[in-house]
Each structure stands twice: as C-alpha cells, then as structure tokens.
Amino acid sequence: MPVMELPAARTLRRMAETLNACPDPAAILSQLVEAICRNTGWTTAGVMCIEENDGVALVIARYNPDRIGPPLNDRWTLATSPTRMALIHNAPVLIPDAQTDDDFPGYRDEARERDYRSVAVLPLGCCDGHGRQMVLSVQSPRVMTPADYDLSFIEALAGLAAIALEKLYRLEEEQAVTFRAQAARIRREEMLRNALAEDSLSLIAGEVATLFDCPVLIVDLDGSEIVPGRSPDPETLSDADWARAVAGPARRDILRLARHGGCGAPRFSEAVLDCGGRRLVVPAQRVAIEVDGHSAGALILFGAPETPAPDAEEIETARMVLGVQMLRSHVRFRNATETSGELYAEIVAGGCRDLRALGGRMRRLGMNPDAPARLIAIDLTDENAGMATDLLNVLRRAMGRQPEPACAALVDGMILCHLEDPAGAGDPPLIRRLIDETQWFLGRRPVAVSGRICTALTDYAAVWAECRRIAALARQFGRDGLLSARDFGPYPMLLAAAGTGEVREFVEISVGAILRHDRSHGTQYLATLASFLDQGCRHQACADALGLHVTTLRYRLARLSDLFGIDLSVPEARFSLGLAIRLSGVGAAPA
Image (tube, rainbow, N blue to C red; front, side, top):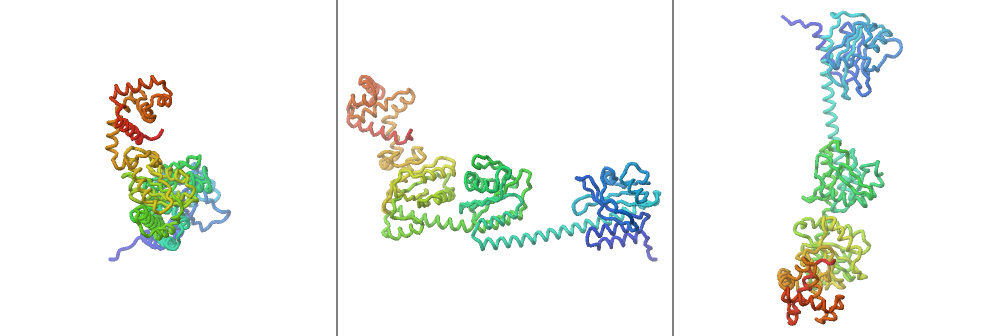
C-alpha cells in the first residue's frame, strides 16, 4: 500500500527544493515570504535585518500582492518594534490586534493605515551576509485565533530558508577565499617577476606596501638603504617630515630596530625613534629578511597595540619578494668585501713584486695608490667578531657620504680603513665619524689606531704592523678610543718585544710601592722622583721645575730613600727607575 504524503509535508519538500535552487539570498527570502502567504492564513509578510548600531530594523524582503497607496515603511525603530523582543527570547511575539495595541505604536499606526490586524514576529535563526540578525514578520487583515496561526509550519519554512542561506553563504565564502587565494597568487607572481626584473628597492617597496593596511618601512642592511612609506604617526609627523627623519636623526634607531627587533613577533611592540628633537613612540613589528642564513634586512610594520597580526600569507609574500631584491645587495656586498679584503691583505703583507698590478686593483676600488693615505685599524674583540661584516657595512656607508676617497676591508680580524689624506691632516673629521659610528654600533668605545701617513705602497706593511702592535698594547693596558703611537711614547716596539706581562712586573718591582703610597696618602713622591731624574739629578733645577724650596726637595728625596730604599747614587738604579716611570705611564690614559 503506497504511503500517502500530507499536504504540509509536500509543501515543505517542494520549498526545500525551491530554496536550495535559489541563486542568491534575496531570492531565498522572496521565496520564503511568498510561500508563507500562499500556504497559510497570513496575507502579507516581510523579513527585516537588525542594525543594532543605528537602533533600527530594515525591511529587506516583502510579499504584499494587494498593496496600494503610498510606499510602505521600510525602516522601524527598535524601541517601538517587537523584533528585539523576539530575538532576545528566541521565540515568536504575537500581537492579536495591532490596531488596538499600545505596546508597539509603530505597528499600530501602520496597521490602522494599511488595515491589518494580527501580527506575528519570529526570529529567522540566521544572519544576512553582513552578519546582521534577521526576523520574519507576518500580518493578517483579520484578528486571528491561535488555531489559525500555523506557527509550526512557518517556523519549519523559516528553518529551511535559514539552512539554504547558510549553505549559500558558506559557498560564497569558499568562493571568496578561492578568489582571494588566486588573486594573491597572481599578485605574488607578478611581484616576483618585477623583483627579478627591477634592481630598485624603492620600486619593489612600493608594491610590498600595498599588501598591508598599516604604514611600512623597508631596510636593506647590506645595501645600507632605508625606504620609508607613510608616516606611522601623521598627527605628529607628515610623510615628508617622516622621510627626512628616516634619512637623518631616526636612521640609527631604525637600523637598530631592523637588526635587533623582535624577529617575526606576532604582536606589535613599542619602538622609540629619535626624530630630531621629537621622540616618536610607536608600536612596530619587525619581519626579518634573511639571505643564505644572513640577516640582510627587515620589513618593519607600524600599527597600534590592538592592531591584529598581519596575514601570514602576506608576510610570506613580502619576505619572498624582498628576499629576491636583497639577494642582489648581499651578493654585491659579499663580493666587495672579499675583493677588498684580499687586496688589502696582500698590500699589508708586503713583499709584492708587482706593485703596478696592486695599484691597478686599488684604482678599480676607487683609491689612488700614489696619493698620501692614512690607515685606521679598528680592533674587534672576540665577542664582536661575528658583527664584523655588519660593522664594515656601516663604516662603508659613512665613507660613501664623504668627498674624500675612502675604503674599508676586513684584514687580520680587524677592520682596515684606508683614507686618502693629501693634506696630511692629523685627525680629519672622517676619522672621528668612523669612531662615532663604531661606538654606536658596538655600544661601547672601540679600540681604534691611527697610523702614520703612507706616501707609497711600500709603507703600508710597516704602518699596518705598527697599528696591530698598538692595538695589542691597548687591549693589554685597557685603553680604548682613538690611539696612535705617540700615546705610548717611544716604547711600542719594546713593549711588543718584551711582552706586557714582563713590563708590568718590571714596573711593579721598580716603582709599584711608590705608586700605591702616592694614591693612598696623596703624596707626590713619584712625580718628584721623575722630575729629579729628568733634570739630571740637579737639586736646584728640579726644585725650580717643581716650584719647591731646595730644602723641601732634599727632604722628599730622603723620604724616598727611607720609605722605599731608593739609592740614586748608582747610575744603573737611576736608569732603571727612569725607564720604569716612563713605562708606568704607557698604560694610563691621558688626563
């Protein structure tokens, strides 16, 4: 015996098929309100979405085949509508006779104007494409009894519509995700093609900036180039002021952020930038750009603390595109470093027979082998050895801003700076700038040695050897800053040959007790002894040089003999004391 299908069930089945075939949300809602009015006692129906921020309900679908007269109201104030109550309780709200109901004056006024009586408002159970909740409203021109409401049938139809809508929204979202992925892939491929074709960081940076909503800044560490984008704080700095700050006072802070900021941190952290009298505090995130395991640069994103983390795919696209561009800078920098390092290592080694070939190679680096030049040796401690190439890049950039030719290379674990110095200036401004840049980069005063002027290629080996000896002495005696041979008097060769350990022991045995006594008692015995020896042990000349009476001088000398057993009548003792006094001054920084 065949199974008989009830009319309501047939209607629901047909509606399910119809709603699933609808091509868009508007068609689904139109089919829903029409089906309700054709299959129930309700004559008009509508669907409203809720705009909570504006406090209104907007009609987005309506069925009213017999409508005449002025346009219907499409905007309802939530305060005078039952829609909010239906959503809060997730249950139908029934108005038996809207024309006499005072709880919802909006419906009462329209019911009298349009001549309808009973109203039912039901939550639809889903949201529209903008995430707004929806409600279903049905009306009848007569006062309906509860038996006439057919709410279960209406709720079943609404449930079918909600399922169809959610299915359609999911499909649209999947299509949107697919479209965005395809668009991102096409854009990434185009950006990669441009990066491969264009050797310009500024052009590539402009394309990368379009990936993000926030201001970005790109730093090429190997190429010493910073490309600013929009100002991270337009209320404080205009875009033009920001570009000037990046090129000037903020440059060091930006380079430090690019090297040491939180690599790939998922959140923005506070960055402090000196913008030339203005202290800019702005949240920033650093994305490291690595080439062959080397930190070649960084993408810096500016935002607010509550700014969500950038999309991982966009980050990866930017990293890939910038990595291609920075690879060029890295290769150029590495080749220049290897070339200059090999050349200067050969020059300072000495013994080269073909000086003309060496001179030609120097000219290719932009240096004149026949011009007077000065060598500066910047010593790197063991803990800073791994920073040598980055520091070399910083110094090369500082040299590039100067009118006089200069070059830098890694030689013997030190940085050799070659400065043409035709005027023979003892301390040109560039030297001080190099020391300042090194101190900023290392975070401490470096050991830097300024060598004698080299007038020919054959001078370089001896001058470099002297620079290395003085740097070694500076390490032994705890000296730093810019040093030269004159800071150690006539003794660098002696100290290097004898070894500083033996020298210290000799000074300690000879005058160590006098030094300690002077420090603890505030006496001037060592200065008196040094002056007496410098004056050839002549009492009156020494007293005049010290501004003392001869009797006072004789008393001091007697105390030296009593306290320290010094016998100045023996020539060997006088020579030994004089040498020890001079060597004791080598390790002391000048006042």
